[in-house]
Length: 357
Image 1: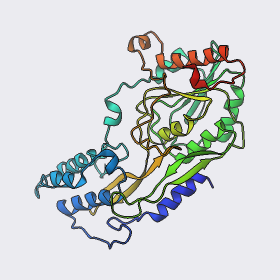
Image 2 (image 1 turned 45 degrees about the vertical axis):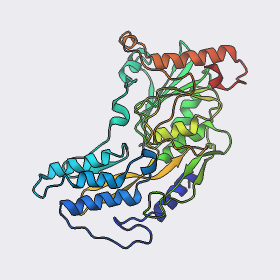
Image 3 (image 1 turned 90 degrees about the vertical axis):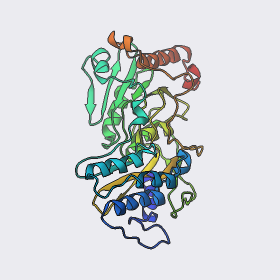
């Protein structure tokens, strides 16, 4: 059993499951009308959401602001939108309200930023539509530069260990690997562990996780450390560059958190989208469900990465729209140039890759 899975299972076991049933509290019931459903939703967040202090949100003031807008004769869709607007005050991409007719999302964690990614451009101008693929992973050796390019589009699908082994063996003569997780919206954190374990040769402290212990906004357990162990298969200790954008979110954000401190790894592109809270779900009397961040995850230095992870110093690069029209991804081009320069100037690979910036 994976170490991180054990921590998450422990947190889930200790976290109350029923709406309105925090530790040492009795079960509350709510009327199945607009006011009762609003109060049930607000209370679920009030007792279980984990980032009120980090986000600087006065949740009592938010309740007063939005509850006063409820009208007994309002349309159901309008009530849904009002609840969704209340949740948007948290500025959290992990917080969603789901009904049988709509699902709310907070999108400003990425939509105010350049996309900085075009998969069609890469397939056409760098891969020549000729590459190996399995599930969410595609790869090819870029022969002009002798750099291995790996596209990982999601962590929602499992990471096939045999495919990872084959991929790394096929790129073993390359000068380095580029892992492109731009637009990777996350998925399963155990998949992060499965993949990241191929880039270490000893056990590492991956980070810390907490869970709620009571209804108060500051009621948290002590931080539990979790560790990653090296994979049993092929391990890659040559230079690695990870490409990121604001749509690199959730489990993909966690992957960057774990990988960035490694001496042979650098991060290039834009600050990731964040999303470091493990989600928790609850249900309203009307039957709608809400998912929100309930267990904060920290990096190995106990720094919260909810708001994203910055690129390695000197690696903050945007795509040039005009260059893209001419067939160039300026983020990818920069990463290739760093790896080529590293190979030329650092023959014995004795210097940390980040020092090449």
